[in-house]
Image 1 (cartoon, rainbow, N blue to C red):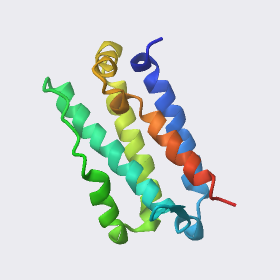
Image 2: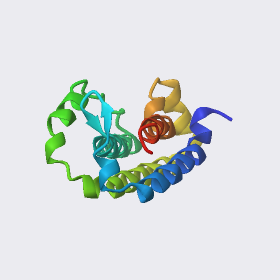
Image 3: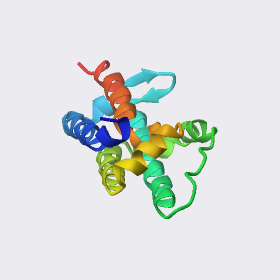
Image 4: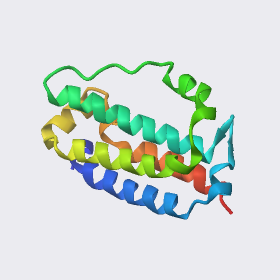
Amino acid sequence: MSGGASAPQRNAEATARLRALVERLDEADLQRSLGGGWTVAFALAHLAFWDTRQHFALQVYAHGEGFPAEDKTVNDTLVSLASVIRPDTVGPEAVRAAELVDATLAGLSAARRDSLVAEGLGFAVERWQHRHDHIAQIEAVLP
């Protein structure tokens, strides 16, 4: 099975893993440092942003337009806004965003998902990889 065809199942599994993680985090966990100025809460905000961004980019693509290019300054911009992100709401938002993009991707045919992967846009289809990376990063700092 190709990456695009298997993505919905793997994305759903990653979303379930994210949901389970978020449900067990407390206020102290959200403030834990991940290094590089990132906290657990910020990593969740980062996930929420990128899943939401890919949802909207996929909406553009689904309507027959090209997949929008990413702005290379986004992560730095997010870091500069970290102090205004509410840690108590970011976990549920990350789960909501994951569910949103998962539904959008599931609505695309396997052929369209495969086409995105073939075009080098697998990151937009295989959201599970990004989630797993940050979930592992967060789990590594939890007691």
